[in-house]
Amino acid sequence: MTEDPPPPAPVPVDRRLLEVLVCPLTKEPLVYDREAGELISRKAGLAYPIRDGIPIMLPEEARPLEPG
Picture (cartoon, rainbow, N blue to C red):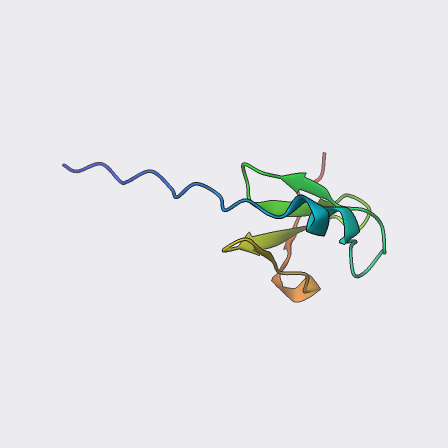
C-alpha cells in the first residue's frame, strides 16, 4: 500500500494585499488562515479560498464556515 503524498505547502500571500482586502459582502476586514489557505470573514460566515497565492474574492467560490 502506498501513502498519499503530503499536500502542497500554501503559497504565501503578499502582506500588503492582505492589509487592503475586505469581504466583498460585509466590507469588513478578513483574517488570514495560512494553514487552510483561506481568508475568513467571520461576519459573513465565509472562507474565501486562496489559489496559487491569489485570493478568490467571489462569494460563490467561498465555503460556509461551520457554526461554533
